[in-house]
Each structure stands twice: as C-alpha cells, then as structure tokens.
Length: 181
Image 1 (cartoon, rainbow, N blue to C red):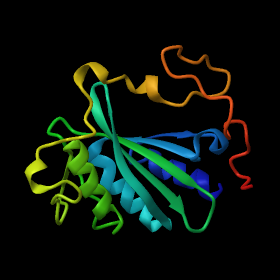
Image 2: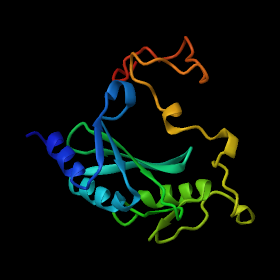
Image 3: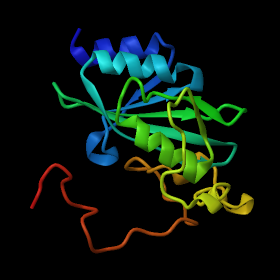
Image 4: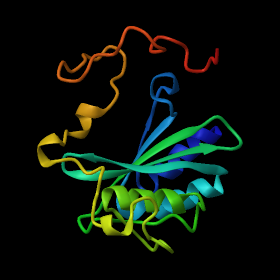
C-alpha cells in the first residue's frame, strides 16, 4: 500500500469522507469532509505526515458556513482541501497550536464571517477598526446564499448551470495548470 492509500485509510478512520480529485481540474488531490469535532484530529494526523497549512478560510453557503483548510505535503506531491461545517453554536476548534500559520487565518475568518475558533489563543480583530467589531463583511444576505453544489467547480462532462456566469473565451482556462509559461 502506497503512502497516499495509507493516508486515505487513516483519514477515513477519523472518520472523514475522502474523495480523490483531479489535480488538473481542482487544484488538489484529495477532498476531505469533516465534522467540526474532527478538525483537530485531522490537523494532528496531517502534521505527523509532514503536511503544512496553506490557508484557512470560509465560504457562506446555504445551511451553514463551511471552513476550508488547504494543506500540502513537504515530501510528496499531495494537496488536500478539507471542509468542515461550522457547528450550530457558530464555532469550530482552533488548530493554531498545531499549525502556527492557522493563527492569522483563523483571526481573519473570525473577523470576516463571525466564526469562533474555540481554543484560539488571541481571537482579536485583525483588519477591521474597533468600531466595526460586529461587522461581518463576507456574510451574504439571506437571499444571496446559494447551495454549496451550485458554487462547486464541475467535473468535465457535467452540464454547466445556466444561472452562473459563463467562462470567458480568453485567459488560461484551456491551458495546462502544471506548465508555467
């Protein structure tokens, strides 16, 4: 069993839902869906496997706010996109003590979306002025929130939703993502 297969088995034992992704289409190799209670175990496992944290952010979709974690490995080509729905209490456990880089990202996500990262050592405002402490600039108006499946990138062969903007003809949409020109 190769390293990636062992990682997939260990992630499924958390338990987490793990799906392979086409790096050329998605920009990551594995997509992992977690419950908020599994976030810390997930982070510890990846830290032990020589992964580093690329970013933490969120997306406001129908039914919840999803926290997004992207990690990459130092020793092999493997990028992981993990998603965890914020709990009903509006919180998710902090991983700032596991990955130092999460500190700033969690503070920014807290400020922009209002998510509380429980156990964070210093969840204070980072970008907005003090008088705007209750402003959540990246939360969408109720009528603007879309279901998560409406904003996900579609795999080749799937029909494109006509309500979403069409891709432009120019640019790099047809170019090879692994080639730098």
